[in-house]
Image 1: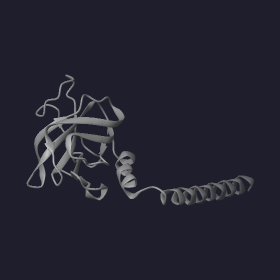
Image 2: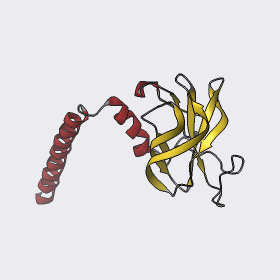
Image 3: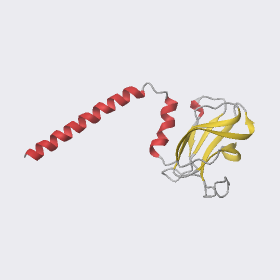
Image 4: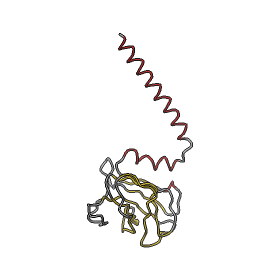
Length: 163
């Protein structure tokens, strides 16, 4: 009987704590810009993720946050009929885990209105990027981790894409 009362008390305390914490989290979420919330979601649920929150013109793209399950690269592709096309540049080799503000130099300057794709590739173990050997990183559903964005647009122009 005492054990049953303790178990009910424990469940009630746990439920109350969850409700209170949820309330505080929801109150704080209202102060976070939507683009930051959208960018954070893949980092919670996927072993591999990439986010870009600023889309300036020029010869450098900066990945705001990158998450890799093993060492790899952030690769920038130009648009080819709504899909990743020719590679314009790639990052240095990144270690497994999370990285912030990863710069990727481009072979040609991106202009306002250009659609670009950032894709994660996992290193094959040699420490050198090779598009044929370093395969695209996958999310929990087996899709390649790709983000499309439009140069010169705001965060509303970004889109997680599955291939």
